[in-house]
Structures are given as C-alpha cells and as structure tokens.
Amino acid sequence: MKIHFSASGHDEAKLRFARLTERYGQHPIEDADCIVALGGDGHMLHVLHETLQHNLPVFGMNCGRLGFLLNHFASDELVERIESAETAPIHPLRMNVTSADGSRHEELAINEVSLIRQTHNAAHIRVEVDGKHQVEELVCDGILLATPVGSTAYNLSAHGPVVPLGAGLLALTPISPFRPRRWRGALLGETAKLCLSVLEPDFRPVSASADSTEYRNVRQVEIEQASDITLRLLYDPGYSLTDRAIAEQFLV
Figure (tube, rainbow, N blue to C red):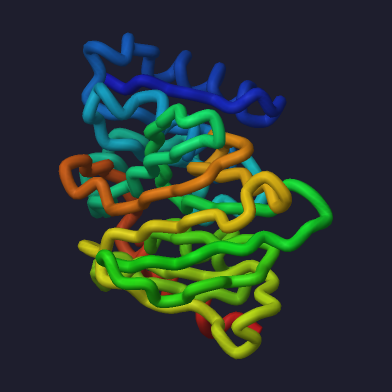
C-alpha cells in the first residue's frame, strides 16, 4: 500500500511522522492509495480541504487532544488497519456568499457554515428554507448550519443537536438567540437550500465562515449540501463516527 503521510506542526505529530515514514515510506500524494493524517481535528479538516482534488480516503490518527474525527495512534499494523477500516462517506456544505461590495465567493465546509456578528451590535438575520421565510428576523450573536460530522463541534457547543452520520439531516442552530426567544433551531433535510439574509448590514455587520475560511461584511449567504462531492474517512471497526456520535449524546 502506498501511503502519503501528513502531520500537523505540533512536536508530537512531527515525531510520529518521522517514525512512520521511516517504517512505511512516504509516497507522493499523486501516487498514493491513502492519506494518513497525524494531528488533531483541525489538521484532519485541513487535510480534507487541501487534498479534495485527489479523491483519496483519509485515515486519521490522533496526535492532539480530543481527536473526535480520528482513530487512536499506533505505529504497528497500520496497513492492516487501513485495509480493514470502515468507510464513512461524507458530503460537505457549499457556501455562496454575497459581500457588501457585491462580490461573490464560494467555499466548502466539512463541519459547518457559521454567521457571526462583527461588532457589539446583535446580528439581525432572516432565515429562508427552500424559498420560504421561516424566521423573519432572528436577533442573535449568529447562526450556523452543521453537517453530521460537524454537529459535535461548534454546533454542540451552541446547544445544537448531535446528528448521526447517515441520518440525512443538517442541524440549523442559532448562537445566543434573543428573538424569537423560544426558537432553538431546526433539523433540515440534507437536500434543503438555506438562504440567510443580513438585515441592516451596515449598522450590524456580519461575517460568514466555512470551517476556517472567513468573509467579512456579508449581505447574504446561501448554503446547500454539495451532494456531488464525497469525502471518504476511514475508521477502525467499532470506532466509527456513527458510534461516537451516539456515545456523545450520553455524556454527562
């Protein structure tokens, strides 16, 4: 098996990278059968974004702290682990942003697309789903749309629901909502098309982020699942994202 290793900048990841490449070799990504990511969840997301065009499966090993998206680290029997791994197919979100100057930008998000107020003024955002206005004016710090993979990240911290992989759902979660006071978000079908319009954008500026890529002073953000793109994450049997998403809901 031809493996391309990618390590984060942390010392532990770099040490393990040196050990693994000495043992298994380091193949150019153009010739590789698989990518092994060494680091934390942030590096895993970076690898998925940067290697998208190569359409290779990614087996992550945790060299960070939480490592929700990764397998445990072990240098032995790596090829055998990859060959017996379960595949988790995931689709990113496609974000289309219209900025205050009229420019358009498109980005992909594996975890979530989030809108956040830029100043002390609360954001006022209109929420439209499949062409229908569902919330005329959400007064909040922000709002996000999370994939099942991202539902245990920022979305969970914002009190959004955990979405198991394969549920066919996306989590729409407000961030510190003030009005409507009782609205706590919604679960949308994976084919839903979401449009978020920023009200009073000059007085209440808002930024939009697709994972770590941010655009400031946005006026409108359209989001939908990029069903034409499939990323393949590899996991040890019994250690899949679905198993961990279920377990996450029982943590106290």
